[in-house]
Length: 374
Ligand code: NAI
Ligand code: MG
Image 1 (spheres, helix red, strand yellow):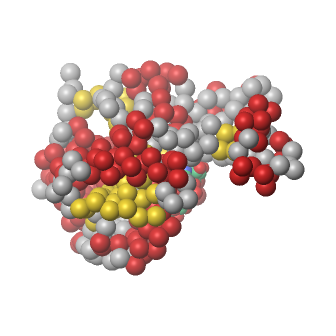
Image 2 (cartoon, protein in one colour; image 1 turned 90 degrees about the horizontal axis):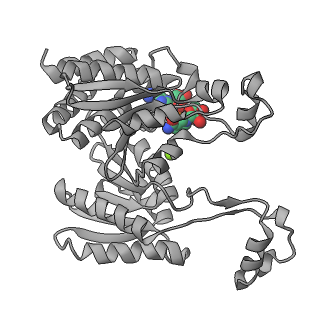
């Protein structure tokens, strides 16, 4: 029996191209793993009315972790229109499988390393090396939303003095998305960030929120961070408002080290930071829970490139490296990272986004060659 069982979820479009690249590299590294393919994505929405079928969920429960490519998703009405004829007009409603996985497997921590590998022509600067920790299951993306406002909720809200400006509006004219924070959620993400900083020899942890305006939720996050920071006197700790942080990340990105924030702020800040080190072709991520994790590039399915083997597999390969590290295959992970860095530095085998004309699989082959010394 193989040492690891890995759920293999290519999904749609270029998700499949880059997963093929990942497999090529994993096979070259000889990871002792069994890869179990899972159905997920647009095809299963269209033909079954469910983009994340129960059988895939069950299969994942019997694996150590998952590697995921990308999926196509569309707004509710468009999604409904593409359902197979026999599913039309029934009660199917599209949802995001990736959000479902995060909640189902309690993958509370989203880790996004943003490192400028020397020689990448897409780097904003060559000395950026930061990591964003984003709370992954609650906050503004909890999914607790109302439109129109139910009468009982309206009654509760109307008691709030700040509701006065909405007093003349009908329930149909109001929409509410709740930003729900829990003490457990705050504590978990902050602890992950500090533990990571400590383990990886990082120097500084910055909590990114907006407690002067969103007092009760951001306030909870900042209070938690201050308390946990005291357990790590060797790490510098500071706080920044999310809007200011967006400016500083453009002005002095090299000064930041570990950033920790809530769900939506983390979504935004990590995309900004990702663009500073090469953009979608380089932006990798890990979704980590207490006993399960899923690794994915942050790009989508890029339908216009689907099956063309044109896109950059680096984001996928860097995500694969995060998986190896999480599995404890530290030596293999660092061999992979060094190979990726060497291919980037060399200016020989590059995809179109880096100004080259190599294919997805040619880049993967070159990484595999370097990782195995072949
Ligand atoms: P996208 O990330 O799929 O692509 C946008 C553009 O970025 C592409 O056209 C391409 O020019 C470039 N790009 C993306 N990945 C690249 C790579 N590896 N190498 C080089 N260039 C790359 O975003 P878009 O077009 O907004 O969404 C397409 C579909 O993907 C939509 O259905 C969307 O909902 C879905 N999506 C899925 C995500 C996921 O599975 N996690 C994340 C983002 C979008
Ligand atoms: Mg995002």
